[in-house]
Length: 140
Image (cartoon, rainbow, N blue to C red; front, side, top):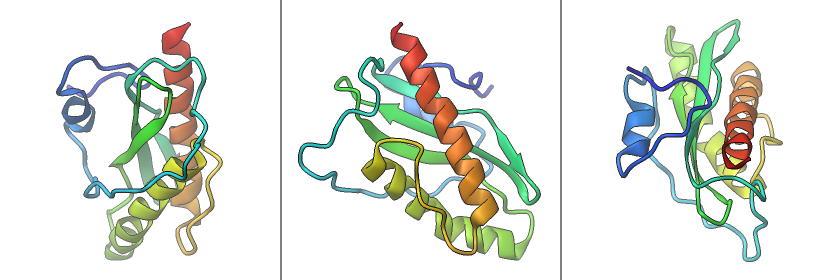
């Protein structure tokens, strides 16, 4: 059963649990963060958080994030992306690693839109913002 949106998951298998039942996810992409990268959220609790499903006219988008004990976003993975049509699948496959990289570099939901995948990019940002908010709430 997928975790509730925004729920922190405990244990070593947290990321696997967050991604269970994914209808689409990309292979993880390593991204080097610039030296001195500021924490994502000062008060974020370390863990895995899942954002809400953000639906656009091409389909649902949902993002899971991993936050380190220092409050840094260390991973952003799409749990769900539009892929019902061949074109949607192609755009999602191309946009997912770019959006994840943008999130890691920005350490926020303020990410650039991927050309040709505007709706997916906007929905990704919405779900990402929800996951970040859940991380912030978990510490309070």
